Image 1 (cartoon, rainbow, N blue to C red):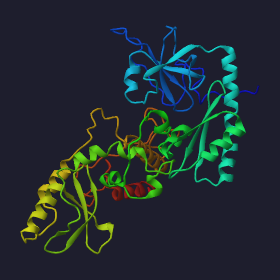
Image 2 (cartoon, rainbow, N blue to C red):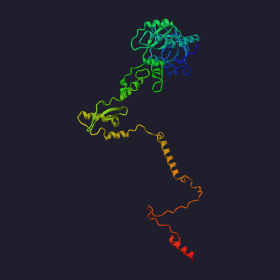
Image 3 (cartoon, helix red, strand yellow):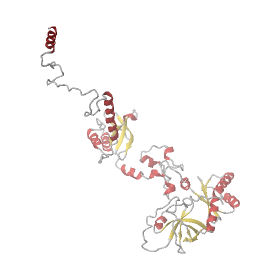
Image 4 (cartoon, rainbow, N blue to C red):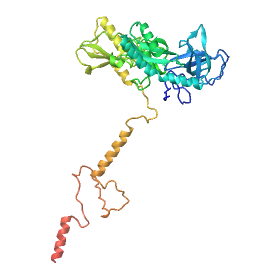
Length: 422
């Protein structure tokens, strides 16, 4: 038998023992239960399918072990993904499948024979899906086979399909049963559930939420994007499933709470000189951005929400203010400081300042190469005599010529000439 990849089933070599989708961290694993109730265990199957079974035989089970559980009909092979008190919290979120009003049972630990048969069933899933899609195309049914999951004993297969409306697949079931010689079960899923089963990477760079932690899907509308001031671009708002992104609902409540006291933005603001129209808003900053009517967005004016209320109240009373923004709001906006540099190490210009100093030194050294030499080292040409500083002040116009002991320089030169003649 060829090598079978069982990662989709949650079998991998990790400390947790489970690498499947919708994994739950057992943060109550090291806490002793206060009471001993029913021993219910969460068992995981392919992709995002989970169910809950009762440990009737009091087996010593560990997370990540393969077990044989009750199927319909026969038995199935699953992986234990969670046990303990946290299972009852998970049962509130997921639908539990009951058999005659009772929990289904865990039979035993999976034997080597069960595991080999289970891997053989896994190896047939991809070929069965491709063949079933061809059958659907031949029957001209408006549906798509998204995934196929075999039961552990190879007696049953679940076909997950996607369809916009109701589909009469009675003829399809007959053809599939005759082709594969197994029991057929059809389950309809949506586009989001298909993306959760397949998995992938979202535009944020992380794994899809529907394949990692989301167990139920809430309807998403474009109103969530409008509340958050997001442009209604269908290419950016749609996820890999083709529907609106589920993450649009994550922060919409915070935006709605912040806009409870905001005035309507579809009413223009009128002043004595011109009329302003609304363009965008900074919701958490409490600022509306307006532009003069007929002009582009290059002349935006930031108006606080309080000032917008005042202008709207004046316009309703038939009055027009002289300015759209007054000084008290400008002063308040200047004092607004959302970041305090306490340590002083987060200054982005700290490296730039050092570079500027070094550049100035290099330039000065280029102009005067002798400036950086040490004064204690003698020069090769000998020490230069220090110049006498004049006591006179000014720009040099009132300076006196240097005089020697023999008098003025002209008089001394005449004396030397007379001596040479004599």
